Length: 238
Image (cartoon, rainbow, N blue to C red; front, side, top):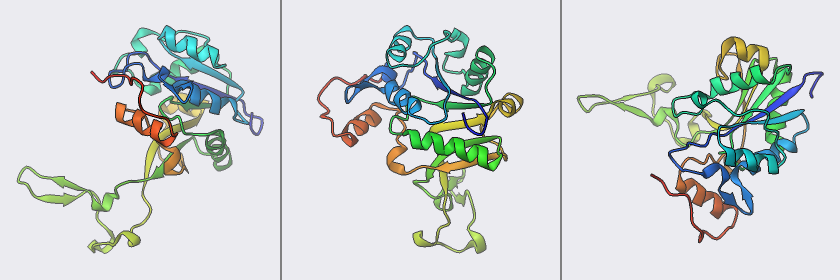
C-alpha cells in the first residue's frame, strides 16, 4: 500500500510462446525465469497482493511454489499469439477487483529489482499521472534513423532542431520502453485501456537491468551476465 492506495501485482505468463518455448520456466542460476520476477515483486514495499495470470499448468505450479498466488486460470482466448496484454490486465482486474493501483510485471525482465518496481509506483503516485512505465536510454537515437523510400532515397524519422547534423555528445536524451514495469491507476486503466498516453510518465532504469528475454540469444546473454556456464540445454527456437 502507498498513500492509502492498495496495490495489486500481476505477473502475466502464457504457455504458448513460439519464440522460445518454455522460456518462462527455464532455470537460470537455480531459479525458473518467472521466479526472478516473483522474488522482486515479493520484495516490493508497496505490493499488497501478487497474482499470476496464466493458461499453463506448469507455469502455474512453478509460480505457486515460488510464493505467487494463482487465483484463476486464464481463458484460452487470452493466451493466443494475438491476445493483447491490455486485455489480460483488464481480465485480471475484473476477476480480482478492489485495488487502486495495478503493477504489471512480465517474466521476461528478470534483472529488474524491487527498487525499480517501487520507484515506478512512487512516481505514479507523486506525479498524479494515470500510468507509469519504465524506460532506458535508447540504443539508437531517432535523429540517426531513416526511412527508405521506394526510390531508395533516405528521409529522417525525426529532424534535429535547425536541421544540422549532430555529434553524439550533442544529442538530446532519447528513451525506449524496456518492458520491465507497467503501473497504472486501476480506474484510469479500465477507462483508457492502455499504459501509454499523454498522461503516462516514464521511470528511468539502467541498461544493465533492462534486458528483455525474447530469443535464445537473450537467454544466453542473461547466463553470461550472471556468470553461469552456458553448457546446459537451452530451449530451442522453432
